[in-house]
Image (cartoon, rainbow over all chains, first blue to last red; front, side, top):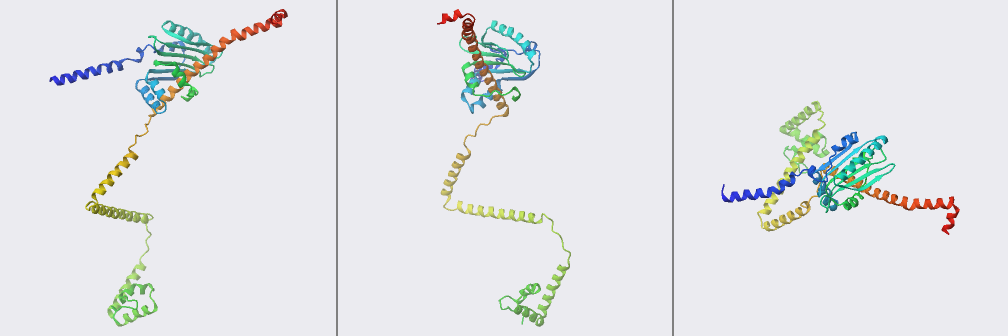
Length: 182
Length: 188
């Protein structure tokens, strides 16, 4: 190997290190990640909706969003993953689930999540928690919603750099259809 | 009269054989044919041969043409016509390129290329794959859900604040007034 070839190989190697280390970080390693496997025993029912977006598909969605909305595209590019689980539960199952989700949310709060919304109502149960390990930015969001209808039990985990104001502002533009629409 | 003589219309008499057999001659020309046949044995023989050929053709069984015959013939004709047209264009183009018009032709070609590039070379509208669009739709739905949950929760919080501190207090006051008139006098 000549001196020039050695320098070229060294340069390529140095350039590859940051890219490789960035892509090697798994979504499970991010502080805002929530492992939905924890819910399997808690819910005790099959999911009717399961969404897992990360990596390439999330970037593709961001680029698709750029056609109509730069703000949405920029926000999506900062995310590392979006997970959604939906369940079809009757009233008694929902009430039983509320009794189990409450302690789970408390456990998350003990693990460093901040409880920002907590609603207990006759026909609605909401827990929203955010994760902020640095004190500078939100790195994850967890939302538990147990609504009044059979198909209104939805849990959401958003992983990555999140601006809650952006989510509120952007979310208001979009229509929430029934779960069956998805 | 020799059968190679011309008729009153200037046509040679032998050209009158077919029209004669078709019955398409004027009385004068018809008479000329008959005269020529009577006077000239060779002409009479030609006339007899022509008549026998015609009768043989008429006696042949008629054949029905296949239904696609006309379209096929038309296709061949159009193909030939296209070839001729292309050949003529090529010929004209060759004559232009070999003439003094070559600089003008080069300029015109350049302009055409630029115009075509302007029309067809515009950046194409980005297309979105169905998978990406489906993902985006679900992401929008998720964001909308989170947004709505937050807003509804805010409403709940306000109600939670209002009920104990305002509505509850008013109920207490109203109860005192109606149950204990003396309490009402305190309000005055």
